[in-house]
Length: 146
Length: 266
Image (cartoon, rainbow over all chains, first blue to last red; front, side, top):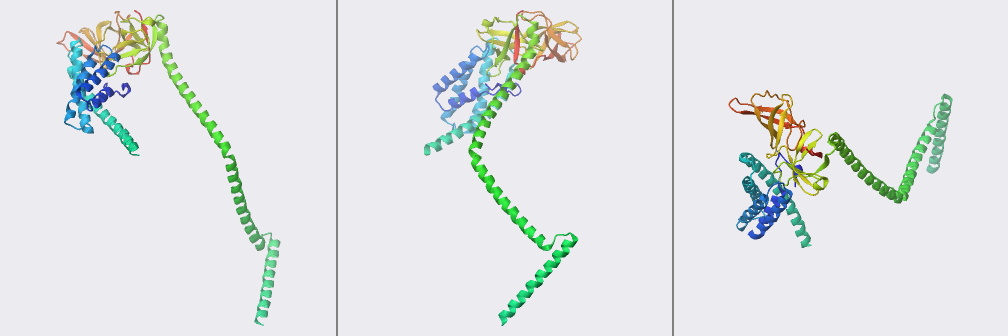
């Protein structure tokens, strides 16, 4: 979605940030369903992914919803860390499925470097998203007080 | 008595002052200069006139401004509308100019392949995980899988998926892209495989004397006829212990700035 924000052939993923955002605020079943729907949408747009995004995003959403039972989901640093880790996990699952589908092997190191860089970009994007969301929450709270 | 003396001295003083002024006036008149009385008078009068003129002018201008406010408001609204219309027109013309430039660039290619289908790039992969683009032509325009896609300066890729109204083009920089390639200078064969941002020409014979700057073109294959530029050699990986040598190519087409392409049937 952010094709024009590509940095060194790596594109930040707004979809993943939104999925993790929702997963951290809901229970496991809803988070997994949301990740499933988001992954299906990506697979419909993508070429030759063969359902890999569906599985990868659903699993990532499931895992992202687990820590929220013990940690604060409104913490920006925590959200950024979860998004960064979710990027790595999702790419790991995605490329594993792609390799099983016949994608050329031997590119693990390259994909790992890309995933790390994308994790950093997604963490920055997560901070921006959270910052904007907090502004809207503050305005809504002030409007409600009036 | 005292008052009478005061009056007398006052009268004498006035007479002396008047006589002095008269003498000065006469003297000034004789020498052609401005007399002190005239000078003082004209100075005071000029000052008063200037002050009066400024006040009257200010009042007149203010009044005129107040009276013209409704008209100014109408003119402002008209100018705003005109400005908005001109801005929109400018944007349209800029877009048309850009489009005409890209159309002009693709026109020679379209002329070279009269049976080719001209298409525009309309989409990209959601996570940039594959080197593909989506074009706005599909099976209804006569496009079939594995047909070649070219731009003004060379090969873009091949059709990987075809829908009724759109198609997916696998770029030459994708890892799964493989095209028969020939070095134009020495006619050495190889396979051009995508490498994310560049293209690697692999399985080139060790006898080939590759040079930086060699132009690599397509060989006769499933998607392309021979002779379409793929890229230029920028790096050569040659080892005496290996069976083949490899060349890294810079693609002839700027794949990051694609706009219009032509789908050619082999």
